[in-house]
Amino acid sequence: MLHGFYGGVHPADRKKTTSKVKIAAMERPPARVVLPLCGQDGESGEPLVKAGDKVSLGQLLCPATPRFAAVHASVSGTVAAIEPCLQSWGGKALSIVLENDGKDAPARPAWTPASRRDAPQDLTPGEIVDIVRQAGIAGMGGGAFPAYLKLHSAIGRVDALLLNGAECEPYLTADERLMEERPEAVIGGTRLLMRCLALDRAVIGVEGNKYAAVAALRKQLPLRGGDVEVRTLRARYPQGSEKQLIQKLTGRRVPTGKLPADAGCVVFNVATAAAVYDAVYDAVPLTRRVVTVAGSAVAEPKNLLVPLGTPLEDLIREAGGWCAPPDRVLAGGPMMGAAQFDLSTPVTKGTSAVLGLVAAEIKPANRPEGPCLRCGRCIEACPMGLEPVYLHLYADHGRVRELAGLHIMDCTECGACAYGCPARIRLVHSIRSGKQQLRSLQEKNRGEGGAG
Ligand code: SF4
Ligand code: SF4
Image (cartoon, rainbow, N blue to C red; front, side, top):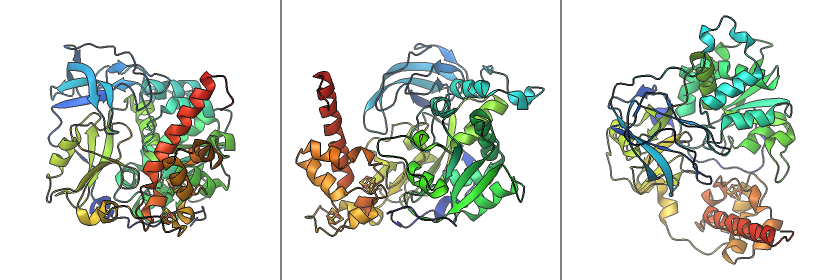
């Protein structure tokens, strides 16, 4: 078993309530879905439909933009509105709102599925990348960056394809179940990505405590000399962070301010690989994803296969509702997820979980901040080798140039520093604000023709 990235923490994994629960479709599908046409930081795409139009399941609603993957109808029905809607990150985004007619009437596939081709093995890398683009596949580990762009920019630049099956955040088991229940899709998608990149090998990294998932994946592969290797990793947060995974699986370090491709690597989430498989073999665009619904406030924790755009409140209802009043609801895991105050916000391509947590599960974060004890625990925990305590101090005092010198932009906002801070200082909050201050300064300098 591999280990050996610097820093990291060991939060209680709290995965038992859902790790053995099979993925289930929703018994009561959503009456409405909300499909954003842009992410947190980008311009909206041009919708191809208008209010009142009838749409079919899988119909293209908005083509890809340079920062956002194409959007397809996740249910069949009618366009109720195209308007700014609240999203799980806290802001509003122009979105297409669909009324579900409950028929799931499918649209005609926009490309020929490989399963119906005479020689699917003859698909060229360019054809596969184009299908990934048309299918609207985005990073499903949380980033939601368009997969075709990542793939396209990696062609000819990388010699290592890595698949992220670590799922190191507490509570989350959506990827674990997917690997266990659909290993052929994960391995098949990995092979398609290999073909695009002209590589004859790929490595899937999975935390070693996911025994059944590892066994299911390995069952798809020859005992020796296979083209895909499943490697187990020691459970530690943030094992699934891109740079840590690269370091562990290849021994390479991504230089400061650079991308994985600069270290010859590209990383995709295992769910993204499965989506590529479905798109290529069955001509299915990305309209659904598996979401873990868990936490002590949830009556029946589950892994649900849900249409994109489903309101979070529908997932809670599907999981039996609240069994205790939640003190915090999160979209995503407890380390990197975003607190939710309005549960009408929709599931997006990057939504891995909805958690309803009671006070005992979030106690440390609820207590007031104390003064810094200069204990250095945050520095020990930081997997990027940063000094979170100083990032926090400089950000709070507006000392922006010092923040650049301390490589604040390398922070992945993993939350490992804040997790162990005995003073309960909101380090990530300060660091986010520091990053924003630095970006503003750099933009100002660029505008003035300065060096930044
Ligand atoms: S949030 Fe940033 S500073 Fe804190 S441990 Fe993670 S990478 Fe380091
Ligand atoms: S862990 Fe918290 S208390 Fe300790 S040095 Fe870092 S910020 Fe200060």
